[in-house]
Amino acid sequence: MSIQKPTLPKGTRDFGPKQMARRNYILDTIKATFKLFGYQQLETPSMENLSVLTGKYGDEGDQLLFKILNSGDFLKKVKTADLEKGPSQVLPKVAEKGLRYDLTVPFARYVVMNRNELTFPFKRFQIQPVWRADRPQKGRYREFYQCDADVVGTDSLICEAEILLMIRRVLAQLGLNNYDIKVNNRKVLTGISEVIGEPGKESALCVSIDKLDKIGWEKVQEELQQRGFTTDAVAKLEPIIDLKGNNQEKLDFLKEFLNSSQEGLKGVEELEEVLEILKHSGEDENHVELDVVLARGLSYYTGAIFEVKVNNVSIGSISGGGRYDNLTGVFGLEGVSGVGFSFGVDRIYDVLEELSLFPEDQMQSTAVMIGYFDEEGRNYGLKVLNQFRSAEVAAEIYPDYAKVKKQFNYADKKQIPFVVMIGSEEIAQNMVSLKNLDTSEQKMLSLEDAILAIKNK
RNA sequence: GUGGUUGUAGCUCAGCUGGUUAGAGCGCUGGUUUGUGGCACCAGAGGUCGUCGGUUCGAACCCGAUCUUCCACCCCA
Image (cartoon, rainbow, N blue to C red; front, side):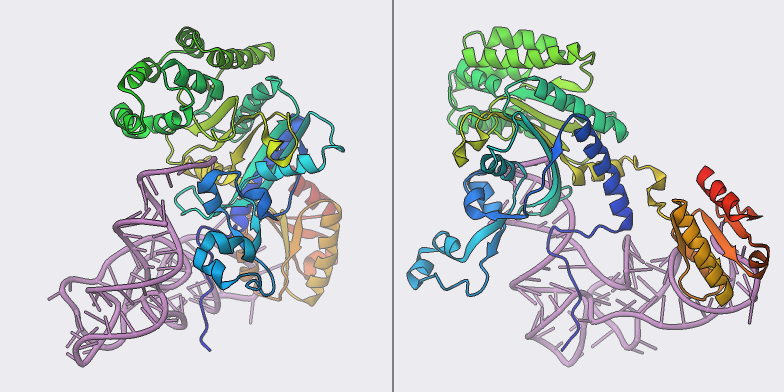
């Protein structure tokens, strides 16, 4: 029997103490903001029935779902005829559960199942891992956390405006300044496809236009024509691609451009109102940038669309969201409109790391370590330890009899700012020796004074 | 899912066209210092060269498969 090296599944990671401290720094910031805006926390199971998950994310999404093999004899329902028909025939017979792919669909399921207990509009936030059988890349994992906040049961555009405010608040607290919240509206995209004479093709339109930054206008034109857009339609698109100016200028242009599309004008109106609400709140439009070619999540977004890009970093978007008019419809509850967005914690982490924006002192968990020379010191130290903790000072005692050097080394490595040493002298005088590891200052103090010194640091 | 790329000590990496006992820096352990960490000096431990198979007298190096890493496409947080 050979010893095997332990490994991690592709695209998953451990989070050590340092990473956890940093992750919690991000998570706590986000959570506090969600709460401040009146959202309540929800958690749902890691696994859902496959019937809940499949068909909600498109064919691509279904492929990326992790399925859970049935327990026991998972082959018992499979017949040889099924095997010949291929995986799609076998899958439902060997797996009936899957890992959640996002937080929005489980949320919709929850809303439908609890519709009679919930008070609408219902504002919830949810911070949990999701799983995708994607091919990992930088900033792209198979297990990652999403931080969703959604409101269901209202069409009010106040929700959209509040999303902008929450994003700005969180990113400001994390020290991020150089970023854009790109905003668009699905109805504008619909309008554009109507105006250029290709109604109903906004999905194809957007998939191509979305690549504008990456491959350039020329290549996008080619791709559009491959997708069956007329040269006339592509030409009409030109002014949209070239659109520049501030938000109001862009909106003014759109009003003109989309003049013949009722739907398109509705979208412009909604965008204007969101900005209007910001104004009434006494807020400016900083970081908010109308991006007419922003297109994401089109399979379910029907109104506003958001995406947050941090500038000058290698990571893609760190947050995104939008409004969906009929999220719960697939589960039999019609007419519930919702709007929400999500922070990608793992990506925010990578961005903060790339920009060195993590504060220095997140690692400090223990405020003081107690060291000693012998059994007598250890016993005295245990009493001191307890008193530190009673005084709400995070304290630990070195567990083994060891050389003083080793004890100090431990404190140093763990970045514990203070060490209390207990020897015969301290015991005799009923005092403690408190050493500040930053300044190397050491003083003989009463326990009360030591507690004060630590707390006042 | 398609195409490419990577893997040598805990970490970052050397290792020539295949040739004995695979190296460095950092880290780790111990010592110089039995009431004091960081610095310095000295010593030491630590490697199935990702894994399995093949070619060869001989493989870290060549070939195949597989896993992993990163990248592009697709899509996405």
